[in-house]
Length: 371
Image: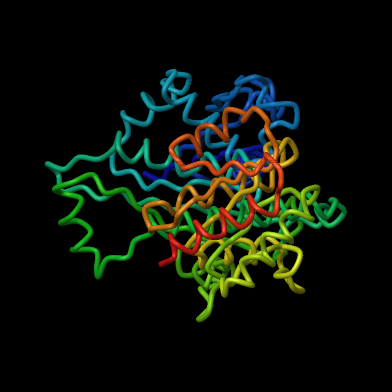
């Protein structure tokens, strides 16, 4: 049985059209969205709809733009049993092929889909039957939707960051084994979730016709898949230190970059390293290539969503050997996110004058770490 699970407002709208206009015998459809995104029971009257969210109303902006919020809301919903009805319904099914329908750029879709996909696969995993669940994620990029062209540049930069993070996360779970028999053998002994991500990144239909993509077979989806466009390729000579900071602290960030350069250390800093091209992709390349991630902590940076995104990506690289160096340039209280990510990292206090001496101290420490 083919089971479609739509996540997020756009994904739910497309699956709704698909269910209304196509013959979908032997298929079941489920709809998941956050309360704050505006999906109500009335919006999916008669359909298998499930609402998640209600975590401080997903902050004032909603979850739509910020992927880390979408992931957190989903984890909360799973652990607090808000989605039990969905999971109980899925547990009753057999011979399931999962197809998740979402977007690659929104916070709810791109952030929640992996959390839900892995949980559902765990529910359906039956090692005694040597059972391998076929799981695909169909993610539509914002280039499929002409109306997004009018969105502000800053929103598109957040979208780009979401897309790259989604592709990078999927790369760790995508089927990389030699053949199907190997997969079945592994899944027969351990729970080993994986999925095929298909990223559609071109305007092949108008919105009212875009639902037709849901009926495409895998060979056709492979031809349309554009995730390779967003895979980060490490440069041969990468900066050793990535400097994360708020633009309001530009002077201090520049002074640190100068001090590192004087000591023969190459750094990545947005004001000098960004060139023409996708802004978010270059940031991800800088973080992925660095040996040390240095974040300047001030009242400006701890409330910067861009800095939070960079810290989140750096935190994900701790197991790869990336070192995080928090440098306090202004005494301020860290918010919950910063405390979560940075509480176990060695802090360097640069808030006491003279700042030039504090910069020299932290640069000397970085030299030691690199050695």
